Amino acid sequence: MQFFFLRSLLVKLDRGSLLRRINAIMLYLFAAMIVIGLIYVIGKIIGAGGAGEESTPASTEMIIFGIIAIIAILAAIVIEFQIFYLRANLLWNAENSRYGAMQVLSTVVKAYGEGLTTLVVLGGFLAMIAIWLLGAMVLYWLLPVSGMLPIPLGLADGSPFIGGVLVMIDALIVGVVLLTFAHFISESIIVLGDMATQLGPRQDDAQHSPAAPSASGPPPLP
Image (cartoon, rainbow, N blue to C red; front, side, top):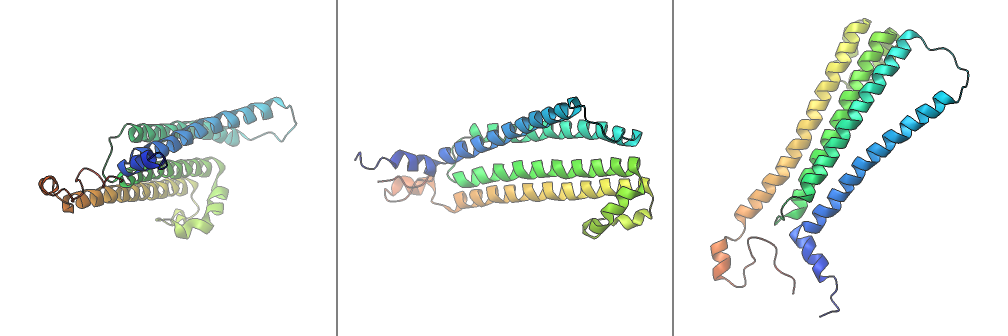
């Protein structure tokens, strides 16, 4: 009946193809937003540099830190773009699955986990460089959050070099834990889908029983 115009849409939802495409487009858009954000920030920096406003001269350490920070942020942006673009491309080209939502969620969790890990490692690297170049003052600013870190910064005993190393190690530990947890959640979702497939009706049973649902997908809509 023509009245049921949503039938094809619901069929695509059941097969997982529509969910895959929607989430892939969202990841593509996220990757595009990263590039647009980079262009915007570069434009603001160029605009600020050409404004000609007088300001307090920066120290040599601040200039070096600024250069290193720009390079590190650019590298992180490239990594973030590749993560979301490649995950979106993988999701877009994936085959239909009986459990489409699990397939989508597995890929999306990986993408955001990998993106968050990149930001954590970037933050740790910039904090380490800041402590090394700007001295114990930066280390003192970070002491209030020291209790939430795997390795307390108090172990540095005021040494900027040791403090910077500890911050980087903390960032790596947190990043690895986040990445491992994200992939664990993703793989758990896949395992649940595999278990559901194995525990579902076998293909032989489905062929001999007209009323039994197909093992390759959900029951068809009326």
